[in-house]
Image (cartoon, rainbow, N blue to C red):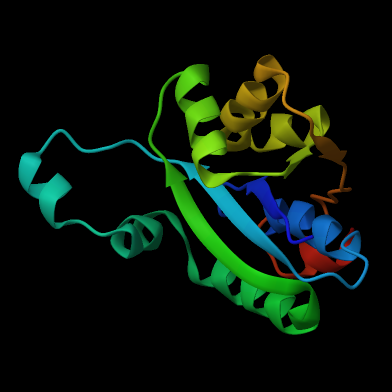
Length: 159
């Protein structure tokens, strides 16, 4: 059975370790993956009418993140049916619950609390998942700040 797996991201390379963990656990089954990030909707009607999801993603992401994502896509190509990046615009747990229900998410991978402390942008989505009582899997990855920053491609291959 094909699943849709939700993975919170803050567009740091190290946040892709949750995706890497999910791909490793897929056991040669091609699933759909959705990277989700928190984004604030603009107050400007013009911006709301004329901005696209691609533009929103481009303003939040960076070249290094996209390169690391491309590496993962190539390495685990046989385990990926589809991989999308989706913004979450809500401010409440109920909005997040509706988001998860509307997308028919079957599994969620969240970073451990230790990793959330280093990536506060992930904390919001992780808290929504935990407070709603949704089933999730916790992913822990080691981060060695002294060797390299959290936003290098090497971070993907350490975990």
